[in-house]
Length: 136
Length: 136
DNA sequence: GTATTCCTTGACGCCGACGTCAAGGCAAGG
DNA sequence: CCTTGCCTTGACGTCGGCGTCAAGGAATAC
Image 1 (cartoon, each protein chain N blue to C red):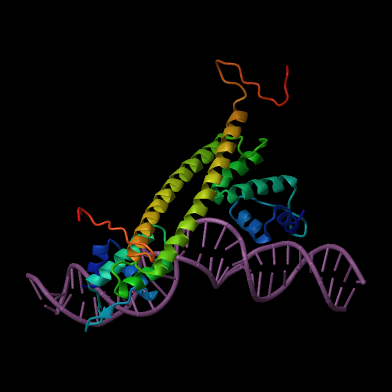
Image 2: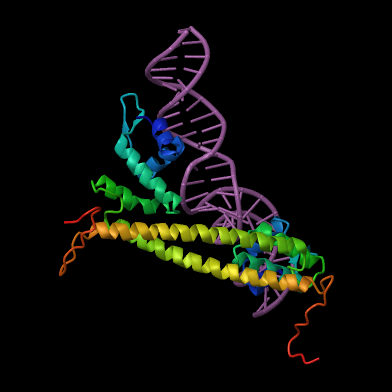
């Protein structure tokens, strides 16, 4: 099949496929007229790449999976190098999620504090007195 | 004070300050010789920007806080526009954290499955038979 | 004077994963 | 023949937040 059909079947664009090829990730055979030519195996490679990309993997991180498939293994993650990428990604995700939760908590605190300071007294009720060390 | 001192006191670089000025975020008065001139108020504005940046706010998102401070309010988040940014950021963080947790779970599942398929039998023990529908 | 250090503006570089436009080739249909 | 639609390579643009270099002016120390 040609590049347009492969792109459509994988839900991506021809530009993306040429980009992958330029990165050495998905090289293509050539027809006599110079057109790129792909087969079902290439579609599987491409689907592997796209799946990992959707998970937020860098292109370079998908390379072990692609190499693994091309080496004849049944799945992209049948090779130790792919498992190593999985594990590294899990660590990255844990670290990132931890940071984001920390930031979320801090922003939440700031919002609560700012809202309190912005409402010195609500209509219909007395404002709570929350000064420190107070026995009035 | 001049740009170098302000940058150092805020823990950033002169390039960054000129960039902020180019974005209209932190304009500077000029001394007679053309040098940028800042005061303690500018340091406070800059600290506000830097704090939010460390939280992952875009530069544009810090603008309401800076405007609020410049309008004479005691804190950058004393204004409704700043609170709105806080709330929007909280929503963004919640969404992002949710996505990342989902991805983390999925990657974890893939890793576990791939590890299982990679170890058809451990040395020292019989491999667990987990085929479907089996009464041997 | 001169050496040093600060300051100025301007402009290009970077990163990742492509988007977009340009100029042209090739195949098929009418 | 002409049009349409696919394909080719090449090259520049995008986004954010600066880094880095270049060429030159200004203030201070010696």
